Length: 183
Image 1: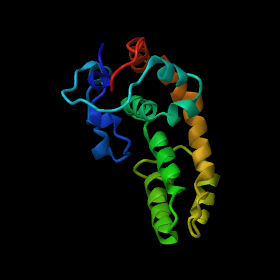
Image 2 (image 1 turned 60 degrees about the vertical axis):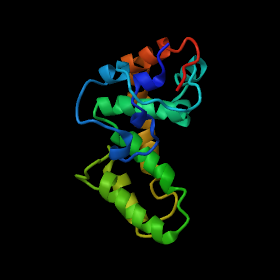
Image 3 (image 1 turned 135 degrees about the vertical axis):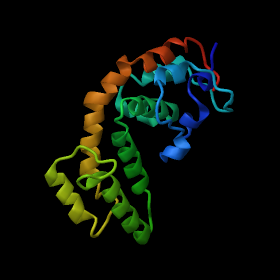
Image 4 (image 1 turned 120 degrees about the horizontal axis):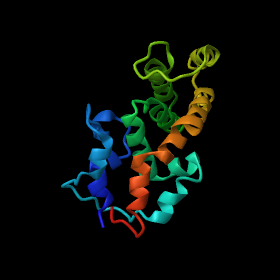
């Protein structure tokens, strides 16, 4: 039985959102990468059919799974649409910041990277939401990106997530886990 380590390179199972640590490559076929054997082995818990099948119940279930999120991220990357998930994860991390100084600096960085017009990882939100956030980050709080995060979550839930469930990536992994799979 192939392990997930043989299907997805260990670097792609890393939970960091930084492209250098996620192990993104600048090209290549994701299906091929999923089916290629990795020479690295991961010493993590078993990923079983039951857990993977729960991913189809809701986007929330998928994102609450460490491996589910990484596989979904790999799928989105293959479609050149991973900025929404990346933004959602960054916002979840942002909400945990306690220091007002760090919160202010991070809010500006998030705005510059994802929110402002022509941002390098610009997410698809309306002008009104963008302007509300521009105002909110002047006095940042844990909720200043909530409106944009809800919009992005809705976009993923209605668009990316259903495509993921029909994708070869998900189907191949699901088919390969009729018994527990060693990570």
